[in-house]
Picture 1: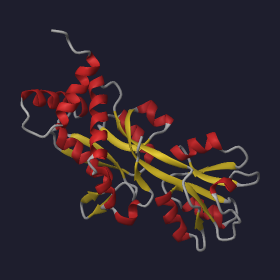
Picture 2: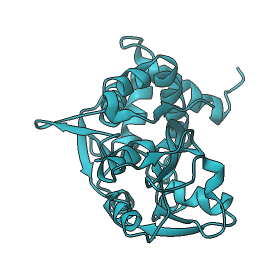
Picture 3: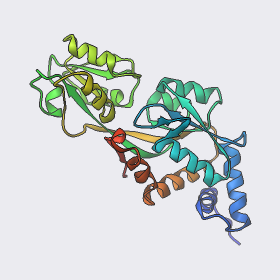
Picture 4: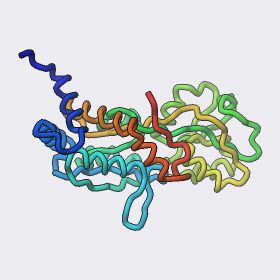
Length: 271
């Protein structure tokens, strides 16, 4: 009998793992193999970025699309889960390098891709600009003009994208953890616009009376599943199948909807 290629074998394992429970020994073997690769300690340690549009505290529990996806992933590979809170996106890299986490859902950037591998994109975060009340800028294309100073989070996916598309305006990078430095610069006249994902701009707008969020989105920040480097092809195929299924089944959209207004600007990313 002709043997399956390694790629088809990996895909078969991934698909079998996603089938409903009770489908026989082949599925059990596939699940065990993936679990051993994704959760070597026996528990899937899910890094959860503690931003309001990823997750929020509900007593001692974490709620939001990010922890929900992590919990579902653990369920499908048949292991318990541990939600590891990450308060600064920059700390995600160190968490992977130190072997403290097994999987995450976070924006794709060059420095993160150097520290851990990314699977398919799950979610997109709409990105635009906030302008103060006195600004004459009314649309996204008007931002890129000589003399305009754009405040953008340092080491962010949107910052990397702006570097590629901005030709006339100037980028000013600030810490990513809070919008307050950008708001302070706008109030002091040290910057003209603030670039961030929509949920963060909504927070910033509340701190800057009369400010406006420009309509539309110049970039949907890709949020993908990340896992440690060096995993075999079967893990990549499993992650691909998992992401495709949770999007197609509506699981991701329902998780976003449960967050209400906290998830404004968070969308299921289509190919």
